[in-house]
Image 1 (spheres, rainbow, N blue to C red):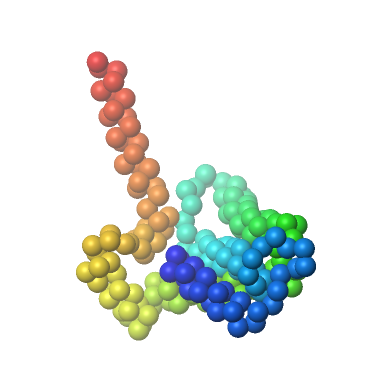
Image 2: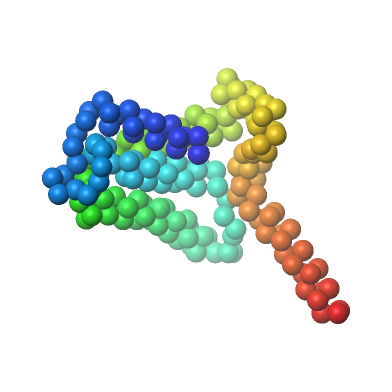
Length: 182
């Protein structure tokens, strides 16, 4: 996900330097305005996460299908709303025109969805494909191991959150017992 963000930022810089569209007349910002990098980031970030939540992510269950579904759709809405608020802030603060903002969102979404399919969904569903094998080779590189980079989504449906919480809870309970026995 974060490698895609670096790709998105690099593309944004290239587009700005190629198109050279100025910011609005009363803008306080420096540099070119097309496309809005904040909007592009939020388009990328929210579309990548929505795709992950839709296709892969497993939330804890409440016992009610309706409540679980409402929670999932609430997360989709929150991500879309967050992207919308950030995009609107660029207009409200005078840094970008509506065209620059919508273009940034569109570029971000057009990167986020395909990138999710290429780096996450396809290798997961087709592990013996070229993308699946390539991802395994990448994760087995010495540098990746040394930096302890991991793909938690490849192992746990929730990225490892539940297991981390259970471990924390066990250690917390042990620490509380030690404190009570003092």
